[in-house]
Length: 409
Length: 222
Image 1 (cartoon, each protein chain N blue to C red):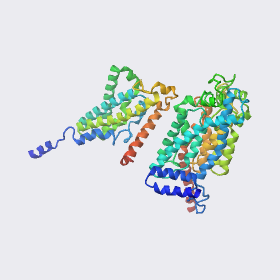
Image 2 (image 1 turned 60 degrees about the vertical axis):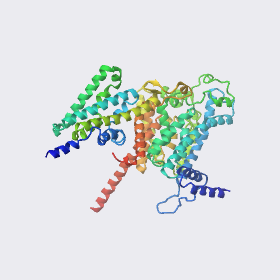
Image 3 (image 1 turned 135 degrees about the horizontal axis):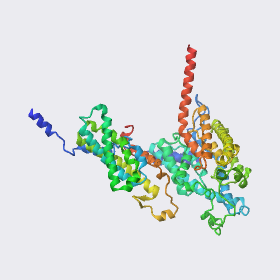
């Protein structure tokens, strides 16, 4: 049966040779559904591992799926928590609520992104690349759960066209696609992505009716003392003591907090990060140096905070707790390590990661207008990555020239 | 001898010969000052948040560019080449001051809105560039046409950018609401990026992309 379908597919490929759009479509779906016959073989002088783009991308998707699953559950949990009903409904109901909240977002992001991808692939006459599979999953993961779908669509279109296709498609993008989509929403529709109320879905929508909550009117029935503020927002405004009074350390680590969909559970992120490191897709150099950069900057802020008492309570937040509030770990595992936009040289990766850590902490702590710094820091360093590579390369050339001159003399 | 002179008179071009017409139409598309010569970007980013100031800005640049082209072309034989830049700047500055004073006298609100950017027409590279590249070596009439053409080419892009930015950034066109209220009620929100100058850069980039995709011979021309 599969053999038959595959043969059918090849016939269609032949038949659509002169219709670029159809050809791309058939080719793309064929290679997603059935493994293509021409696989990169493992032998050859320069080939260490016959790993193609498809496997790389699928591995990243697998690594993120833990975050996705927990994110779905957490949407439901936070939703019922806001109404003081978290003990009345079961695990499955919460998960399904989050699932139905999230599904349209994933569908929209993938539909829009893939449609643009298919269009440009047909236009340029090359086959579809799998690059968007990762972006299509990352984009919903880094958005607030309540974001209107048309904004998701617009942001995805903007990111794919401006950051990717304008520069030549998969592998040519100089900015991280998912972050470009988020930064677009961040600057275009700031009220929908920042503030205290966007991180938990409690607006009255069709899901409320489906889940038998039509008696609870929008926004009015939240329990006393409930706030949708993320730990990060609390820390920025009132300092660490206020955060700990609302959320426990283990809550923050295991993700029972409001936030972007993918980043709340640090365990899921760490599992994904370990998987990426184990399979060799993500660079440990970037992760490690970014960690060090953030910790060092946080430590400096802690030291400075004692001499600027009362100036900024955020300065005094213990530096190691910066790792579990906000999206630091998620950015480190899935965003900074994007192999296309990061530096390519080994030394360059260390510098790149370290500077992301430093810049991200500066934006997060020093700038009250931007609650979270990693998005801007990573995009900023994306732009600088080629420059870093250039100087690392020219330093290496200079060193070797000096060495050979010495050897000749 | 007289025959030669007569021949010279006969080959004198009509005012709107094809060659002169090209001076007007070329800058609108194939030799656009913004998308091809990549000049005058700063003001294109700065004043295009709304259509009205861009319209005024475009008119001002058409005026300054054409008149200073005409004047420099008239003076071109008498300008010592060592101080030509200073002379060009004096002419442009005079024209800009003239425009500024006229705006202040008749449309004070707009002149306040455009504020420093009218004064900065002096530094608009398009005008200086046209004086150096064209007016210094051509007769007054073609130079005048060239000034108008380039001013219009600049203005066309300015207004195009401004239309996109005003409609999507503020939901208005020339100050009148064009996006109906019920769309807002459905959850539509004005796009905050369009209000910032960065949007003008994206838009101009997209225009350049479209233009060169349509005419591949323009790629790598500048």
